[in-house]
Length: 324
Figure 1 (tube, one colour):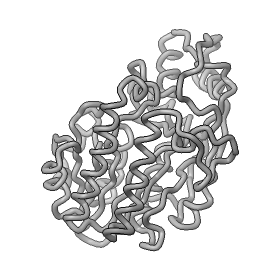
Figure 2 (tube, rainbow, N blue to C red; figure 1 turned 90 degrees about the vertical axis):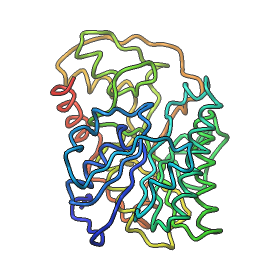
Figure 3 (cartoon, rainbow, N blue to C red; figure 1 turned 120 degrees about the vertical axis):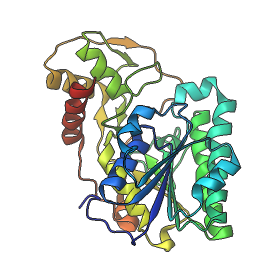
């Protein structure tokens, strides 16, 4: 069913933190299109004002420029809010290896500030972004909640700590928290620029510009690439989930497994180009293979992803052709 027919009580107010980012701005757009009131909190450190500029004229949209590391900002932003969709964080495994203190500050302290503000202001549901990186070096596929290995990066650690706080805030304080372990999300508005850009938008831009992309490693590493609309569905269904499912973390993927070299070839075919890639060194801290078992999210959240990789990648390429 996706998310378009979901119904929330009249007068519901949503706060999307990191709302000017890739996932956050798509959540804002979806909620506004459904007629709900949306607050967006973002300090624009990685998010872009251009992502939310089209919403500024909507009377149901409010932009708060502020930082989740400041508790007073979080308290003010959560006032009168029914549902928090906490996407504010710094991503990228390699960057976290270079800047562990910053990741601790933003992803752990910032998330804790948001949970505490949500608790104090009586928010109904607190849905937050976790990551498939929490599986670490556990070799078994597909990845299943409860079977995690040793963490491989500061980024992964920050996401795991967030999940532990989510569990505690449910058991100690009764705040309904839902952690969404995203598996390699892609789609419209994902930034193709910069050394830490995600692989799909980066490859699309380079191929469109006649450049030669570099694949880190041998290209045989695999990922569960997940189209943005599946992630929107998961966030909104978590807001409607039973309180009995709170305090838990859920895999949010498409349930598929794509090898990087095959993804590269699919992009070349879709763009009508033939370019042999370069192969570079393996990235430190990266998980080799990733594939989500989404049965827990199906059962407890009603998550039923509409978009497989092929459907999603064609929509993404169409968007980049129009917007790059």
